[in-house]
Image 1 (tube, rainbow, N blue to C red):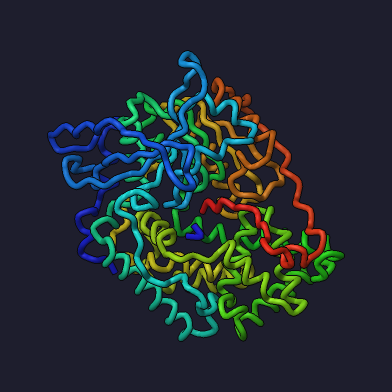
Image 2: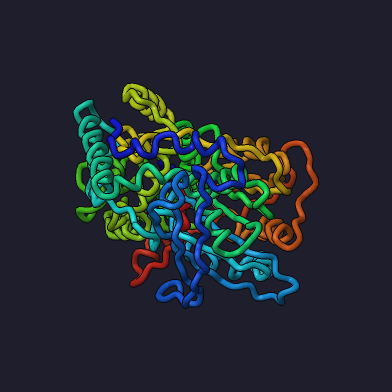
Length: 522
């Protein structure tokens, strides 16, 4: 999430509408039985995935025509480690996105409080359709995210018009690259891919753990195939009624609030960073540096938009706050090198594939405003009170205004017929604000809501919180959930805020600065 119609979208029009009328566990077809998928041939993964098993399976491009064109979904597996009598089936994993690669996810349990419980499952990662090692891979070659970009915040209508032209070009190039794929990239399509994976694995039911967009994917699957769900964990939850335009407006407000938490934390450690003794003072310094980068990009790479993208990562995980604060402090002291390094480590990309995959799903899951006046009004209004992300998020999603595939109607999320479901959420999550979890909890009546009270990170299980991992482990072990009660069903304290660096320039002076990995689950 931050997150004119071409004729090649016509074939996919109405996909969700047609499929919603079918029985939830039926393969959509026209007086024909869908072909059974072939057995999976696993082989050792290589490179960064060494230690896992890899494979791919064919799935229908269009589930209305299961006998037609096929695409491939890439899979990974970490086999169960328990004896056969303790085996609990497959646990499918999704990190979010839309469109993020999930092949490495079976390794995420290592060292966590849920590692032992995960040994009862075959841990299954996958790259969603169009992503990573799945075929075809969507890459539009747009250059949309290449540095140095114009300032996200337009100073006048001419600058706004120039951004619109870039957004239109991005959409056009995606249509040229894989226009035949774009009408079949909805969350519902991916949910039906999950069921194809289930069938290929020879399982009657699946267990599922999803983060961010993965929560919406899991909820969509559970709505379509409730009798195929054994256990379902949703961490950092999308608000279903807001997909996707309204959810992005909510994001703009939430990221601004989380940025203020970062500014306040930096002020608390002014003896290290020397950027101001109050959050307001640090925030003022932040926007002064941003303005300076507009006049002269750091290292010829980091202008105001690249600066925004770098510091956006701090809204997902506070583990990078000490490094971001050091980048500001170093720049304020006259050195731009560490700021340039941080951009390369946290935000730079050599491909638009991730962005294109996000758009391919977000733009077609639901309708977006058809008048740019609406987009402009909302962005200009929100920017006055939430400047940290608003315009950047607007341009991240603006290609949807021109997307060359028609939007569908989203699946209406329902919890009918589901077993107990575990929902996990931090209260100050910026990427998927808290009300999304509250709404999902209401829709999935068998769910229990576990809240990291006062936490602000995104994707909070398998990330160091022993209390949350304890709830996850109990649920994976035997389905245990907290007793139902009004509001959250259980509370966990957040992990402590990070400590500052020993000195603001310590990381910058290191030959190989070690910035924590952040799993940005948009």
